[in-house]
Length: 171
Image 1 (cartoon, rainbow, N blue to C red):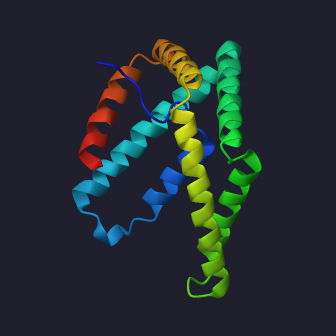
Image 2: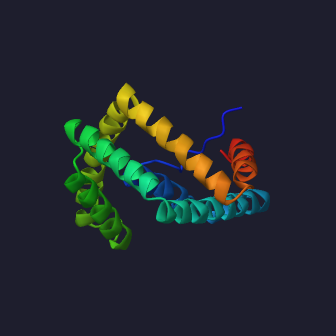
Image 3: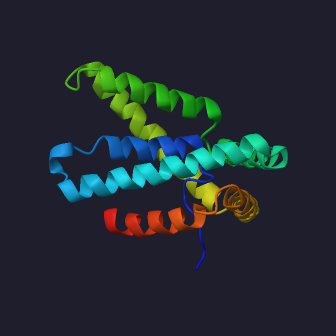
C-alpha cells in the first residue's frame, strides 16, 4: 500500500481552494457524525503538519528540496497562465468577497473575476499534473519527507492510513 497524503506537497493555491470549499459548506447541512469525523481529520492533519514543519526546520536538504519543488510548481503554473501575482490577486479577491454584500454589484464583479481566475487555476493545475518531471520531483520529495517524518514520529504512517481511511468515508 502506498502511503501518501495530498497535503504534503501541494501549492498554496490548491490548499487555499480546498480550504475555501470546505469552509463554505453550511454547518446545518452536516450530520453530527460527519462533523466529528471532520474534526478528527483536522486533528490528524494538524499532527502531520506539525511533524512536517519540524522535520523541514531540522533538515536543510529537505527544505531545499521543498523550495525547489515549489519553485517548479510556480514556474509550470506561470507558463500555463497562472503566475504568482495572479495567485495573490485570487486570494485577495476571495477575502474581499467574503466581506462584501453578496447582492452588491461589486460582489458580482468580484465573483466574475474569481470565476476567470479559477479557470486559469484549473489550467495551471492540469499542466502541473501532466508534467512528468514535476511529478517525479514531487514523488521524490514526498518519499524523502515521509521518511524524515516517520523517523521523527513513528506514528506518522498510522496517522496517514487513518486519515486516508477517514477521507474515504468523509468525501
